[in-house]
Length: 228
Image (cartoon, rainbow, N blue to C red; front, side):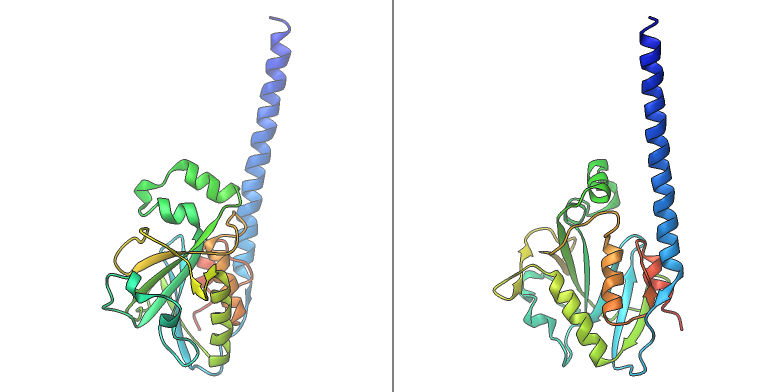
């Protein structure tokens, strides 16, 4: 019994130290994320030639772009036959994220703890989410931004580089769309807590010099600097 008590004390002390380290890391992560959101980079384009939208669902952000312009016709890359509903093709919303989270969690009710833990703490494969829609309407979760054609071309190059391609076309992940207007595609890169879907959107915005946070883990960082 006398030997057991010191071992138990050491074990308890080790657990408390591990818990303190974990809580300290979480605090650092939150402070780091908030600090990155406060400061902005980029500026509004003097030439307002292309209208884009940044859309949030409260957790994830997408970039909404015109489906067809002189700079890019997305229908030349995305096979429209993979979409059952083709009634609204004015805009295309594209986002990047954790593949397992995307495919296994069509609704929050289906979120598994193992999926969330893997997505946050372990580098994991990624996918692109693509949805066709009518032109978005500005709201609390949707921001409009107008850019020059030159800036839009830079954004296009960034988004295109995120797709894993075969024969110059994105690789479809069949049977996993949430509805009739969206699909998933294979993507480059790994997802982890410092490289989230919102970080991807943030990097995409920065590629086109669109006003945004210097670093944005959370969706608010991609929206808060877009109000003139």
